[in-house]
Image (cartoon, rainbow over all chains, first blue to last red; front, side):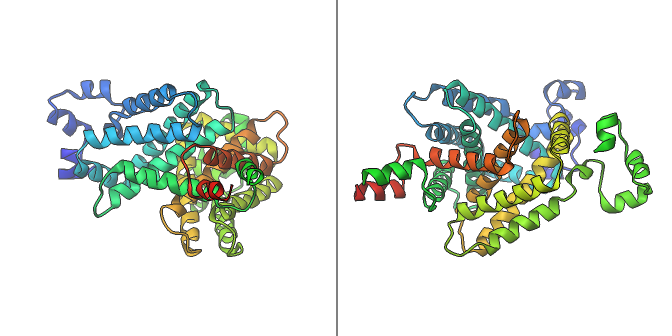
Length: 188
Length: 188
């Protein structure tokens, strides 16, 4: 991140990064497949944390709550671990460079697959598991973008909660009766 | 698609495609930036159809219904226009080739941005517009994958509806009281 911020992402080479870290290029490539991958260090840790959180949630918690809870936990962990200035600088690189954005989207898609499998392990069937996992990604991504772009960023988790509330409100405010609404109407 | 299915995606060159279509490579590159892009012909038409559908929906229809309705319309259009065998062959190429998958994810992200802007034009605020647009993509993608992988594929639109129902049920079945549930409880 130091080199990327000083010289720009495009002009920084793997050779520069390796030299700065006191490594040979050969050693660099033992840890990273390419330059882009440097920006995604910790992504397998993040996936593991998410999956563990989904698997370890109490059985009676609904799939969407489990999933959003897992993303909230990961958001708190991420915010505690990274400098906000670095998060912002990294975000600028991702949005500016198409090939980095592609890698980011692939990583998000992998996260969705991992969460979907964890939901299957909890007994959630299709298409619910896929839809809920993707909704978790949506809430995380929209929350992240609002956090990173805010003048007063505050808590990342608060932005995730706001996005999750928006999703729930949008999904319940429609006129087509869903099962839950029909049930509520029958009770009422 | 003929060449890709006969010789494989990886072994088909832009030169082969141009020759098969009776074009020079130069002309090919006037229409497509690269080989991958051939698989995404019609994507700007699809985006336009989506945006028009969102913008032209009656004012009193809720954001999520407008968005899912737009994806349903596009799904019906797509199914009417493409041979199911071709859709399946294309899907196999996308899932097998990482660089094609990256392009697909970029296209989906662009669709989400276009739908978000159309929702803004309808007066939907943030983070709702982004969350709803992304949810439309989720429902479209999950519906698509189930349609294309089904033994008896049937109607693409039916798979989208099933995914949308799963989303609505998941968003309403959670124990945290949302505005709608609180309202229902007060009535009950």
